[in-house]
Amino acid sequence: MKKPMFIIVLFAALIALFTAATDRAVDGAKGSKAPVFKIERADSLVQLDNLKGEWILLQFWSSADASSRLAAKEYSRLHSATTDSAGNEQFRHLAVNFDRSSSLFREIVRRDGLNAKSQFYVGDGQMRSSLARNYHLEAGMKAFLINPDGQIVAVNPSARTIREAI
View 1 (cartoon, rainbow, N blue to C red):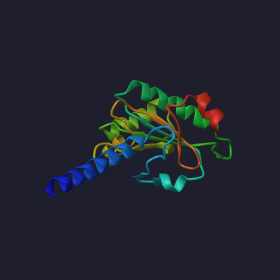
View 2 (cartoon, rainbow, N blue to C red; view 1 turned 30 degrees about the vertical axis):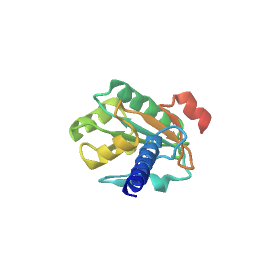
View 3 (cartoon, one colour; view 1 turned 90 degrees about the vertical axis):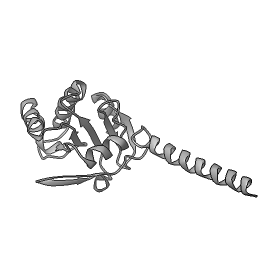
């Protein structure tokens, strides 16, 4: 009696473990719901849940990752080009920086001419770890195009992909 019960419990534990790992693997992947988060800074608070109904380009970048820094500049230009003179945006650009120094982050934003309103600094800590885990940034920085329903429709989208989608 003990052996069959042990096997059943072991099997149930393996299923639960596999299911949890599978759910996590879907986070941050094309076709999945964008993992929710909240980022605060002195002048604003952004919660992904509050942006439902809008197209969002969520970009993670760092000065240590050259391609993500270049992409930050390109995405910032695209966002400016698709925003009219009245400030109506075709998509919301959220650029999240993972540099270890906030002064380095501010200097890069200034030097590269990035739109400071769309730039957020997370530095070290729990928020950084959570975002990196949920969006699978272990292999490098990425960008995600999120539709108005909160679903990821493209990973590292080109300007053309963004224009066609929105």
